[in-house]
Length: 105
Image 1 (tube, rainbow, N blue to C red):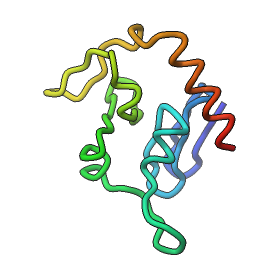
Image 2 (image 1 turned 90 degrees about the vertical axis):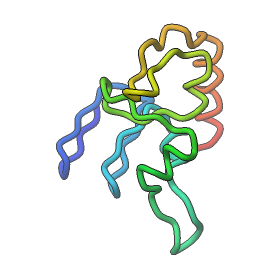
Image 3 (image 1 turned 120 degrees about the horizontal axis):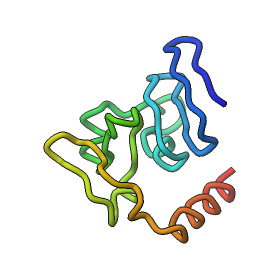
Image 4 (image 1 turned 45 degrees about the horizontal axis):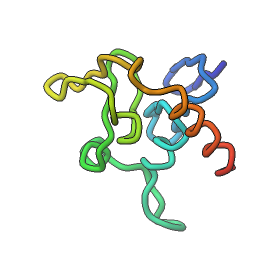
């Protein structure tokens, strides 16, 4: 579904986002938008440290960043920073996130 020519990252999900500036990959449009900071010509990508400070987490198994919204109710290891289970996210929460992302466009 998606492919970046520069870093050769591939993804199949329509909900995932890839930044062509820093080449970090995100589970959702919300997480992608959250990693951008500043305004106008000062707009830029957050550093890894800034994203972690903002509550974002890198799922090294999947290769993408998730926002604090996705962390709620999900067990993960802070020691390894790996998401262990996504099954605890309710279907209602996923549908609500998808609906909100369509409104933001």
